[in-house]
Length: 189
Image (tube, rainbow, N blue to C red):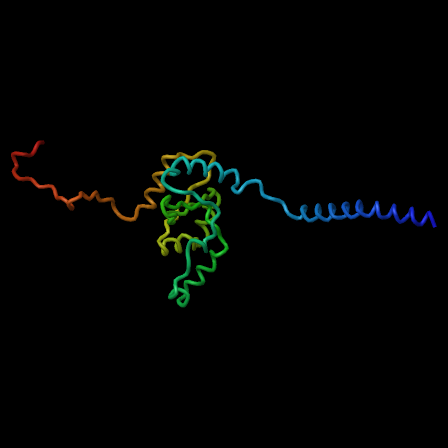
């Protein structure tokens, strides 16, 4: 009878250790199924991100890996007249970077990095529907060739020319003023 009590006490002492070991192995198996990515961007994209931040960081907020369906939606009339097929081709794509206004986070421009070899394949293949859809939606899409180094001034100029919607007019406080020549003697040549 004493040995039965000793076995029961030993079993009660071992039971918490056994439960803890089983829960740790189950927890470890659950964790090994998933792994956190170390970086949001690839090394090439990180290099470009820092160059982009240097080029336009004061003017725009920079966001990355944004799905196209978050940027462009299909209009009510477009769903009926065939545009849906072209839009369906790009719904699973993400844009590498988005520039948004710092004041209200309005979308200003989309940027994609592309490798030179990919651009050669795209030229041989039919036109990429993303460019046409972005153009139809009024979203400037800038494609920049991936490389080891980027010129911040070149990026800034490329983005500025893509974002500019109309020619730049300087408007004075009392309206537009045309130059006038009152007399030919006033001209200096």
